[in-house]
Image 1: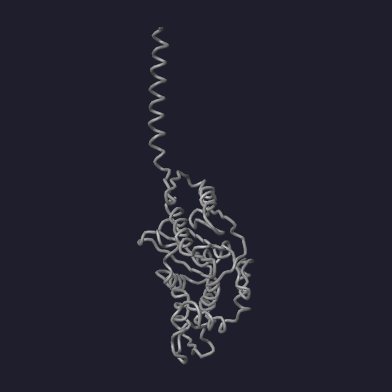
Image 2: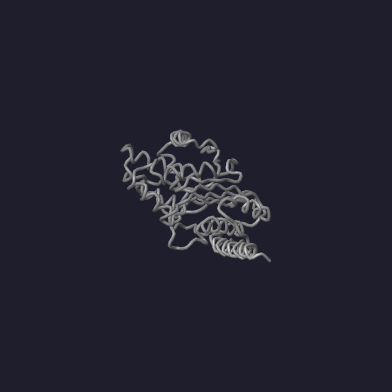
Length: 287
């Protein structure tokens, strides 16, 4: 063989070997995602496709909205579908309350005395078990509505604020699927109000941090937060009803905060649906 040709062959082989070595090392950036026993290799651009495929194996209906608050990247799966909101619609009430407080139109230390007719004797919360006649500040009622999803607290806040006023505020945010009287919303709408809250469009910094604190370490850490490291902040609002569970929140590791809303319908197993929401959140978090 001609010496010049042989030298070219050896050079090409060395370049090819180095290229394989480089590419092999770069593949380390691709995370390996596990859904139960299913192992999926994915990049950031294929997360929606992976979730679509995963949810085909789940019973019931799932709506998802995701947005990275740092990069602006977003995607959804049936994110505009109008669904029963349940307690997710407590979020517009407290957002409007804090918005008005930030403008000096409401004092969060104002007291409301709970009357017998105010007691909402169903669902979650501690006020349903309290004796009528107790007085609570608007701030305390907000804390109860967010941390415990207390229905009595939310009811008296709604009476104090006026449903029409809160609905007008909700409309101004562009939440067109959210109807407080009919108790409906969508995953995208919940994402909208969460983004406005986190980005400081609802209230100033001090009130924003106070409200977010009420949405952390709640009585409902069995969905979005269940598989997320305890060092990561999960600010969220859960909702429940017959045949469905929801969770809408902001997951913030201090570097790359993102919104994730998961709403469900016609799920036959509530506990399994909560676990599925947790898996979705873990998948998105691990990227």
